[in-house]
Length: 453
Image (tube, rainbow, N blue to C red):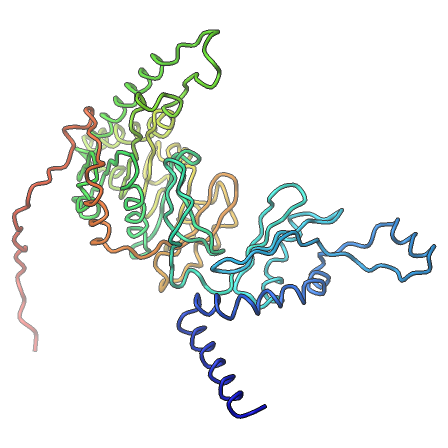
């Protein structure tokens, strides 16, 4: 080997090491994907055997080998149907052998990760007898980069985060109508909410916000909101108006059903999505920034207002889906200590997302009744990884996700760009935010105490 060849090899190795350290995504697409694919294909049989994912050869093959004096066939691993390369890893689709189960593959994911020298391995059952392994070559949640193109063709389905297996996490309101987002202070809950608003800004949807922190989170995005409330009193009136709007939408659906023998089954309307496009009301997404502020009370009058708010939220959660009204409830805690009706409301919030929490009971509020395995994952989120969250639904499945960092200025620019899409809802007209120029507010006076000697 000549000196120029040695120098070239050293430079290539140094470039690969630098890319792996500074730009893991570039390293994966240039060097890592080839090395990982070779490791998987070369080690596949021995790794599956070591992980207990092989089955003995069928009896007819053993009998045929004995009759023909041929070598006895060894154990067989699941057959590889397809190996696909992605920008974050590999996707391996396997056909299970007789007697194997998808749970066996899922239980061996951690051992497969070590054996194939990859960052992460997750599995899911595609159909009976077919399992898909998604392998990531690097930590995709360390520096989130959403793909330039996403599968955003269906209405009310928007990309909001990236999963730990490299797939895009979508918020699909027609599949999971209502959601609950929990997280402690500085856990990334506000950034997740900004991503959600920015993704919905370009959709044909009415945004309704309830921000009891005097509007500091949602009012900067007011140009894209059809209604906003910044205190519990206004929130109670806004929710009552939404309930009235929901009843009007149901009257419209009833008027357009016209069930008779001559009406085809596909044209019988049961929700707004069955109505013709020219008659379909605009869907409404209600974002509640801090639900505890709506449930706390100190006086009898505040208790009556609280019961009124929780009752309206429970009605919207139970009946709002068919009327195109969807809830996004955020908070630091959401347990029974907030009073009656809270657990009934939480039971209607199918989609659950938990950022870093301060105690295990907060994680149990999100996943204890739907995915107990996700509770441990939620309480293990480190404080130096804001934005990392665990998401799950009533099916029991869960995954780690992280939303890309979106500053308030970026979210404001997106909402201003799509301000012309903001629909006017007559029922919510008096809650439409005023968009005039605000006068500067003087800073509060603070008395300074002299420093002690």
